[in-house]
View 1 (tube, one colour):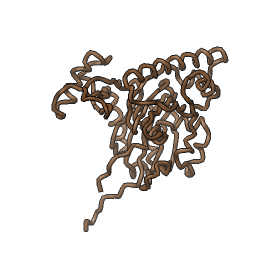
View 2 (tube, rainbow, N blue to C red):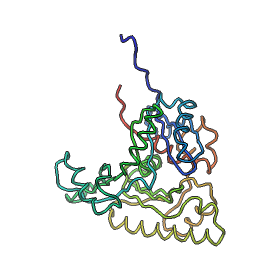
View 3 (cartoon, rainbow, N blue to C red):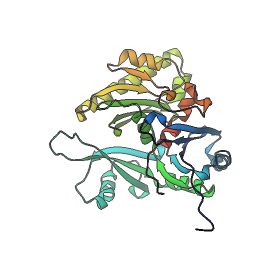
View 4 (tube, rainbow, N blue to C red):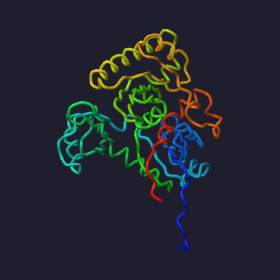
Length: 317
C-alpha cells in the first residue's frame, strides 16, 4: 500500500460559467440509477466582479466549495469560439481535425493559426440511404483557451475539460426529451439567445439570437414587444431550416429555459405552431441542497453552469 495515497476525488463535477457580472459555479452529482431525474445539484455559488478579479473568484471557489477536490469543467463565452456545421471530409479519423481546420479557414473570423479545433458528429438518419456525414466543428480562440487554463493553473485547480454553452444546454435538454421526438430549447444570458435542438440526446441544431437577457429584463412595453417579435421570427426561420435539413426528426415542443422575466413564454405560446413550455429546473433535477435555486431568476443565472456540470464522462478508477 502506498504511504502517500492520492486524494480521492469527490463524486460530482464542478462547472464554472463566466459573464461580465462574475463567475457562476455549480456542482452536480449524477446518481447510479437510470432515472435521469435523480441528478442532484449539490452546490451553487456566484462570485461577482469583473474579469480582472477572476483569480480572486477562483480562490474563493476553492475555499468555499473545495473545488480542488472535484473534477472541474469550465465554459467558454460566446465571443471565444465559433460553432459551425459542415459535411465531414472523407479522410482517416486521425486526419479529421486537420482537414476540418482547412475547411474552416475561410469560415471563421480569426486566423486558423490562432484556433483550437474540435469536432463532434451529427448523427444521420438511420433509415436513409448512405450519405455524407455531417459534423459540428468548434473553433476556439487559443488566447481564450490559454487564459482559462492559466487561471485554473494559478489557482491550483485541476481542469478536466473546457466546454461550450451549446453542450451545456444539450445536457439539460436531454433530461426532457420524449423518446423518438426532437426537443428544442431556448435560453438567454449576457451573450444573447441560444436555440438548440436535441434528438436522442444528440445536438442537431444551434442558433444564436441577438437578444440579451438584460434587454428583455429592462425593456419598455413597446421595446419588449419588438424583442418578442424578433425572437419569434428567428425561431420560425430556424425551425423551417431544421425541417428541411432534418426531415426525419419531428420536434415535439420548445422548452423555454428560466429567464426571470415575464411575458416571453406566453408570447411564444401564442405565436408558434408547436407547444411551448417554461422550464423549472426543480422538475428535472434534485435541488434540495440549493434552496436559493427555487426562483426563475436564480435558475437563469446558474442555467449554463448546471448544464455544464451535467456532462457525462467516464471516470478512470
